[in-house]
Amino acid sequence: MAEKITIIGSGPGGYWAAVRASQMGAEVTIIEAEKAGGACLHWGCIPSKIMIHTSRMLDGCLRGSEFGISLPGKPRLDMGRLMTRKTTILESISESILKLLSHHHIRYVNGHADLVENGMVWVKGSREEKIFWDRLIVASGSMPATLPALPVDGKRVLSSDHALDLTEIPESILIVGGGVIGCEFAFILSLLGSKVTVVEALSRLLPIPSVETEASKTIEREMKKKKIQIHLNRIVTSLKQENGKVQVTLEPYFVIKGTENGTRQPIRIEAEKVLVCVGRKPKADLIGIENLGIKTDEKGWVAVNGRMETSVPNIFAVGDILGPSRPMLAHVASSEGLVAAENAAGGAKSMDYSAVPTAIFTTPEVACVGMTEVQAKEKGFDARSDSSLFRSIGKVHVIGEISGYAKIVSDRKTRKILGMHLVGPHATDLIAQGALAVRAGLTVDFFAETIFAHPTLSEVLLEVALKACDRPLHG
Image 1 (cartoon, rainbow, N blue to C red):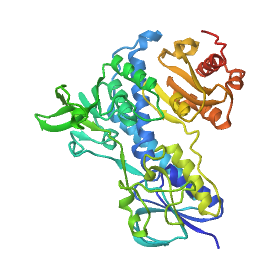
Image 2 (image 1 turned 90 degrees about the vertical axis):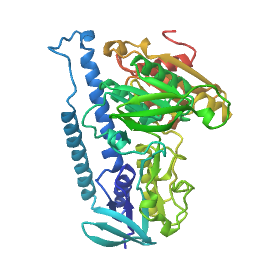
Image 3 (image 1 turned 135 degrees about the horizontal axis):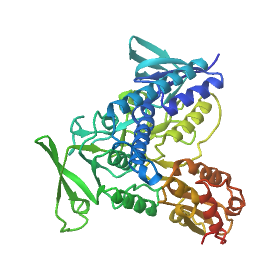
Image 4 (image 1 turned 45 degrees about the horizontal axis):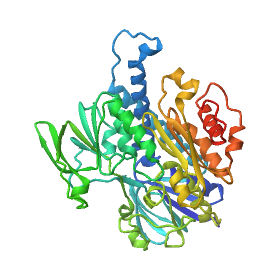
């Protein structure tokens, strides 16, 4: 008899796991509380990129004269049509996921999952039912985190979910959090006409280990060019709403933490809206995993081993529910889903995080894979890093996007590529070549001897590979 595998959540981790489990002969049921595709499709990756694409198109139209284009009037944003386009795209992709599940004979159940006991889940939807399972894969995801000082009301104080459903662009907005989501929204809203201010508690934007300091400095410089105000080392300590505005007080973070006496004065900012982008929190407690004795940390993130198994042997977990100890990325969730599905169906596969690409859709984009030079040296490699500016290749001048650089981190002894870091146009597409190089253990010599098409943006990778071989073409 086929194994009964039930999956909670239909995001990238969930539906990839469902398809793979079905391919391996399991009887698969997938439960989704909201819409097929999960948060990634409806409140994350896809809708935010729809807005990013529109913001860049609008910026391109406003720069039309640079490219020899004259328009009859000043281009303007039609927010209603943008939201209609977003809805149409999301519904189309969601429908495609449902068709994919049906094609693989996967049962899709729309409803709220409540884990009552091992081997059974109670689903509450249009009708209530019990679903019995032999193996369970939890892919229920996460939701926007909040701060006590910034109670989200969906009107003046927004979460990232609210920002994706704006009916009009605010005249001014304060973004709390200079991480990936905060920085992406800063560029989106600035390009769409809002006066943007970003506040970050730490000393740099994009303060995540995979992103090197130079990339953070480049993004900070590009924000300033677009007149985005930035306040680092500060946190919000109070908020009040008055006369249709939000008044916020920013205090120095090191003073609040008591690590320095500090003489820096508080800053008071007034904005039409505040957008809170301070990370995510798990949905684990919403599905009753505590009833099954699944181990979590103090914040509720689920603990798993390399096979994606939880502390309960027949229960697996993938995606955002695992928390920040692993990359909280949609493409990582997909890979984790494949690993979990194979193991749930009787396989023995482990997850490999050594070549996970990070893609950040700022303007310019930021992308990286593998190690930074600092990380490589900490691991004992005789590491070196070499970089080339995007402006050294012809294609960026054609498209009018010359800012940024490409960097390769390599080992002097083996000459293997240990990491690749990009800031520039279409960096998130180009990083796939870096992921392949790191995973395959390619050398800088192999890369430098590869023929790259001209004129393309990928030529910047050839430039930096040649430099890593001590024979730069353009210096």
